[in-house]
Length: 190
Image 1 (cartoon, one colour):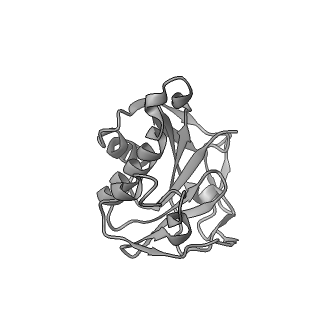
Image 2 (tube, helix red, strand yellow):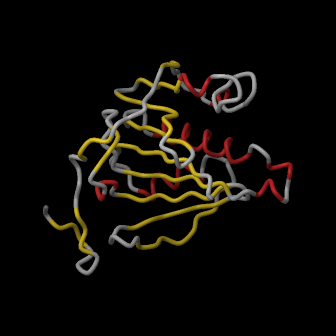
Image 3 (cartoon, helix red, strand yellow):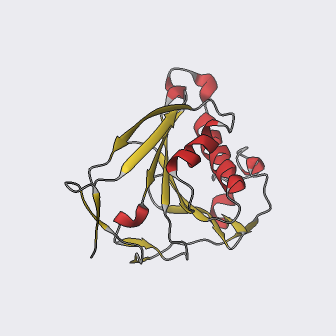
């Protein structure tokens, strides 16, 4: 089973602009060629020794979204390449890449609302709405991702933030839903 974290942003920035931010963040990411998704959208990506990143624009192909107030236009997936299995010195690098990558995106687009769901389980990790950044209180407990004593990740968030309860977020209809016609390579009105 893959270990992934999912980050969603409401921004007019293109996936290539988002990819540039990640590459310039100093995390060793190298760009991959763009690709087409099965629903007719497009994707861009990058990788380093510990993490692979996929950026899909047009999140509006989903009929549902979490009820957290953010209607995302961009989707960024961070996938653990499990490099630590053969290179123990890379233990923790994936969590560092995800945190620093997301902070770089938040810093580059300070007006963008955004949220982060962790571990392919839709666990709320972070939410930014109207410029207010919140880290999940549940994830600050001992041995959790934001535990300041047990993990270095919270210390990497060099933006003003608060720690408060987040989620779980129920699904609601996605106001931005657009159905794609792969044959026509364009959106179809619904």
